[in-house]
View 1 (cartoon, rainbow, N blue to C red):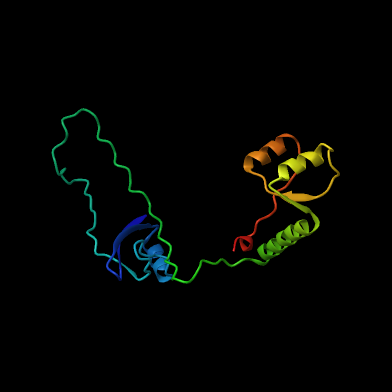
View 2: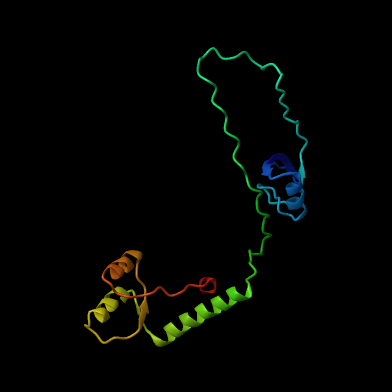
Length: 172
């Protein structure tokens, strides 16, 4: 591992660890090393004084008179290279593989089928599910809302139900 002091083009200084010098060069070239303050990817290595240790060098201060051995200092925590800043007006996106697109389409079809062919009972879902399960009303397909506690109670009673898939498009 190698530790670099870095500066961005806006004058911010920060530090980061890399597997080796080539890893830094590769990440910087791809724009993956960004300033954690402003997000700039125009980053350069700062001038650093090397840390050299010589086996025959005299200690900088006299040894401690205490009989306890010195506690080793833990290495500094590793800081991953920060993600580049997203320009205003843009949002992060991901490329989906064909199998992921197909799965998303199937989940959407399932959700659409249920909402088209079942009765919406809203927050009365736990009550209606119990009535159907215990034979108090005729069997029919329903969907609605239940809190995590209500869902747990239904499960403990042996009432079969499944959550509807929620896709990212549903939250837009």
